[in-house]
Amino acid sequence: MASYLQIENLTKSIGDRMLFADVTLGIFEGDKIGIVAQNGAGKSTFLNILAGNEDYDSGNVVFRNDLRVGYLAQEPKFNPDETVLQFATPQRRDPEDFTGPDLARQMLFQFGLTDMDRPMSQLSGGQIKRAAIVKVLLSEPDFLILDEPTNHLDISMIEWLENYLTRKRTTLLMVTHDRYFLDKVCDKIIEIDREQVFVYEGNYDYYLRKRQERLDNMGAELARVKNLLRTELDWMRRQPQARGSKAKYRIDNFHQLEQKSRVNLREDKVNLAVSSSYIGSKIFEAHNVSKAFGDTVILKDWSYVFARYEKVGIVGGNGAGKSTFIKLLLDILKPDSGHFDIGQTVRFGYYSQEGMTGFDESKKVIDAVRDIAETVRIDDRTTLTASQFLNHFLFTPATQQKYIHKLSGGERRRLYLATVLMRSPNFLILDEPTNDLDIVTLTILEDYLRNFQGCVIVISHDRFFLDRIADHLFVFRGQGDIRDFPGNYSEYRHCVEEEEKEKKRLEAASSSTGVTAASASATSKPRTEKKPRLSFKEKKEKEELETILPRLEEEKKKLEADMSSGNMSPEEIVEAGRKMQCLMERIDESELRLLELMEIES
Image (cartoon, rainbow, N blue to C red):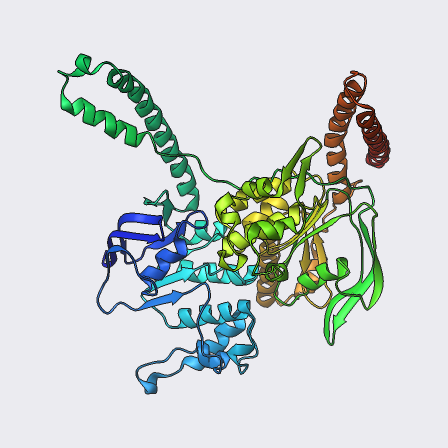
């Protein structure tokens, strides 16, 4: 294979912080490589260095001569006066071969950019990123470098790009948090970890297995070194005359072991251990809600009763109305007709794209959090100061003193997530929460949401995230057509593919036999499906109740024991009595609802 890029002893630091040191690796024709690392480890910096947009401390970066390199930056640069079509159309050396605009129009349409005469200055950040993707793909480079290409794309666009990059022979190096995208497109993973670079010859799934093996081996080696160090330390502590005749190499070996033992295998991870507040049985009900903007219909006579502990994913193309639906629910926008009826105990926590810009840039991180609350309740027994709470989100005391305008994209995301969760919401609404979060943080957020004792609505283009979180989906098909699909995204996608196959089969049969698809369908034997006695939502509600009731009973027994121990002050007894009353009401309510569901099921 031809060598496209050779990197030798590449070292980069920012201030007194080392990002990576003495990196040596080669990239060859046909490689499709994904870069993974925690936020702040230097992924984008690494790409910027390769693209020639950032200096480095030492080392060599050598591309093959005459190699055409295409680079997609996180924040693409553009001429604000250019139209979308002018920006996206590649410039050819030979004007006679200039057929770019027609190609560009087709691909711009694929990425949802239909107003191609619009100036670039009037586009949103997401539209600019999509136009930049079109531009870099149409330039047909030999070597493609992409920084977060899936951000701001809806799922259909991601799947199109995924298939495009899989088919093309273009050599690829990219940073993305989309795990399905990594798994399908990449055949090699580069990890930046603890200032070093590790190469894994396989897709993302292979990387996960081999990474764990590497960490296990490092842990075993570290344990061996520390055991040996204890022996050598005992020898070193003896009286000088007892070791005066010993070989100097043993003293040198001790210092080498001491250095090796300082390796830190602990991984900094976000801690989302924040309890939700109690949520009652009534969540929200939508009654014939309609909303339109001119000819664009968002909702049309939509009705729905949301159940306790329901977790819903929302999918659909850009402009289908996903974010507008959320704003209607939160009363940020008013419906044209109909209404939402929200339960009294519901406490919303809203994580939105707009919310990222709501910080006062001139404030320090700690001051922005203290403006919301000086202390944060984690559970009935634990309360943290604002500073302690920020530590859970990987903001060290030094980082807490940074001004918000100096935070990276990932740091801003974590700070915003902290400000949403510190209010103890019981109904989380997350609009594209996965952008700029590293894979480790995404996994922790997924685990938190799966165990969240409340309701969740998630708008996301991250298919892996949706598969782990959502019990069912609201599929926005445009013009007010919303389908409730009982399953996760992969199951939904499989059903869509099967429907498309069946449609093609019927069309083929129709064209070959002269029988119309409709008549062929009518003469086929109808399938008889037994309708379940409980709806999907009711089944999930029953499962949740069967899980939560034993926990509530255990909590009740513990509270009774505490109240009868004689160790409580009068004030504590009053507070415990209030909690007991709320607990009894919740148990009675849950038992009654469970009996109702069991009766329907029988």
